[in-house]
Image (cartoon, rainbow, N blue to C red):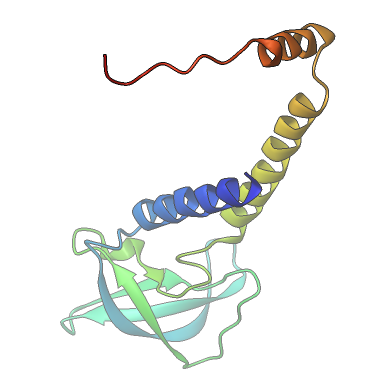
Length: 147
């Protein structure tokens, strides 16, 4: 049962990740970008992936992720949607596909729900136990499939 629940959880989480990414994975376009350190809106120096489309417009995507660092002038792959290239993201396993907030929420949620299910099943009421014993004592009558 534990193995089934874990596999079910992984499948559901995988489907959630596949269809919830912004910019959308299926409609997104990838390109290369160069990492530059610039001031953000709070005047802190942060890494940004700077890329241009058709040599005309220049866009930048925030490249600061937890547990990930970039060097100045490093190249990275960026994913964006043609309708909104200003909402681009670094296309990588850590940061685009898996974010630390989602991963932490899923692990905590899985543990809480598992512990809740375990506590419900481990302490059945006396009435439920009596009903289960009576059910087990009843003779099982096999009915024919065909009449």
